[in-house]
Image (cartoon, rainbow, N blue to C red):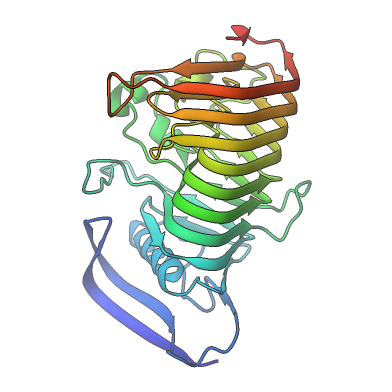
Length: 350
């Protein structure tokens, strides 16, 4: 296999319609028509990422390098994050990725500096830490098993975004990045990864078709207290898994967060359907459908799960449609089966 090295030094790279001025970006690009089979590309050794360095220039470099690696090198290949810590800033982006594995054995740690301004896209929305869209056949995984402490980690650095309890939320509100976001994906697998301290929503999976999530852990907590007191809940909006679309199976997942643990969401194309959630072990605001406004959610099953020491257990919620005040939402064919709700602070069923 022959590789071509592309260097761009002191350039303006436009991503997310935001200009990034950084020292250099080294992209390891596969030379055309020479790659005969899928390869494993080491983020450090092959792509040139810099580990164990949290300086602003390195964070920006690693962020743009990971974006370029996913965009131009990931399809039909494996991007391997070795057992080291790589510091980044929110804004990793890729689209039209096909049949790719992202194997995280180390840590991707997102950092917010004290003087950092939140990066917005052209629509005025906060750019997620990682955003992948219009892609299919993606696997996000780690070489370690579900019971291992060596699973790969995506760390959102949420504490710096949550700030001082209540005052931090008053300053930023929802002006914080989500941790891992996908839009319009097909046949995606997420497994054996720990998602830690998201600034806002942890996994936001929109308009998917064919999604399997298993053996992951989601943690967003201010303290080590066994519960959700007023201090913990000030890390609000740290949803665990928000999902819309079709043909979803999520199982053997543990979640501790300060908002909805799992929420079935509106699909902008009208319907979210055919989803099964089982063997979920969660504490937060429970297992949720909604909020739903102007769309349909149907054929959803939650089973064989435990919601423990949570604020709520299970609940459904509606709102006015974002697009049409006169259009009503519909939730139908819903099954909650064999759900254990232990010591809810507010409501078991709401």
